[in-house]
Image 1: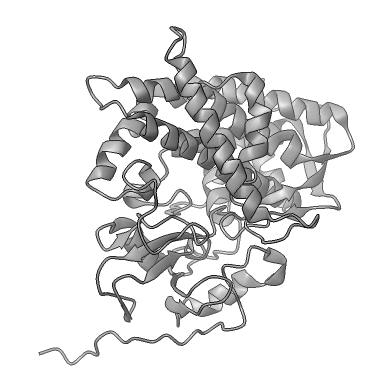
Image 2 (image 1 turned 180 degrees about the horizontal axis):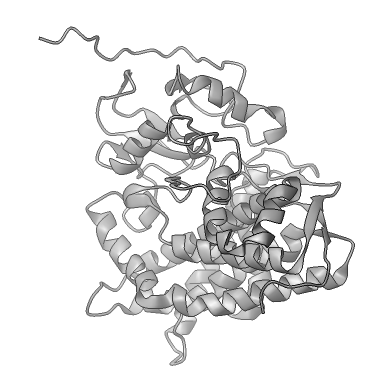
Length: 422
């Protein structure tokens, strides 16, 4: 007979003066160190009500993976972020894949995932590569200081999303301006505006845009983007309803642009602060793919994802009650010393690298291959066209509790005129 203690209900907040839901990263500049201190002793802990209602914070790799892989116990249907989490089901649950659980999730995921599996990314990759190079050549030719968010990181993901979804090129700048606002969550902006209100407005405008796009495309014989193919279906996958197409196209557009944009800014910031990494990649460009994986781990753009416990459950010795919010922090999980040797070091050759920068389990990112293609293209041509880079004054992090990335990132590049690639 086992004498080991059972789970305990401990709602003592070990960080009462720190609000993980605060969208202003400047308020806790040493958060990575704080989470590293907590991981061995509080891998799962109660985060008391502060700017948001209380929730269970999951900051260690093993428990994060358990939450990701068990949608039966940890449901996504109440919302995927702290700002969207609600007591009941999200209005998009059952229609949008990110807030739908199995078994209905499998039908949606099969229809969306099949399009990525049909060689779509392979077909798009050469154009993404050419586009990234054109942008970086323009950076080189401009000289001086460049905001790489505006010049590169915001443009490559929107261009890729436009190719994937069959969006008119003339609409891409408008889409970029809206998707960049969706996850901003600070109550008051520097200009006095309410960022949460702006995010809701941008989300509504994008919903209207994709509804109109779908209606228009149904009358065109040359429309062959993902939006149109989701609506059409094939013998191998179900057609989606109008509501399902619009919501999942919106999800792909927002997720594909905002998370990749943040990941690109974090990658470029790392290069500017680690000249040895830049030099090693110039000397060994074949390491670009492994460096991309390390960039996703080291600069994981997603700060958190939310779930709700569907039943009483034990997690790392904590007694979690049915209905409790459970929030994973993958940036912390990707720095877990039990999984990653020297986790605070950017190791461009790290292998193996079982990071969860694209999540895991049923809700893993369906656009992972497309995101990787963009990161590889930008890194490949950055180390080809330039001999180095350094940060400039004026960098500004996003005001978001969901994404970690830069809203503005001025940098200076140097070049010798020698290129590694043709």
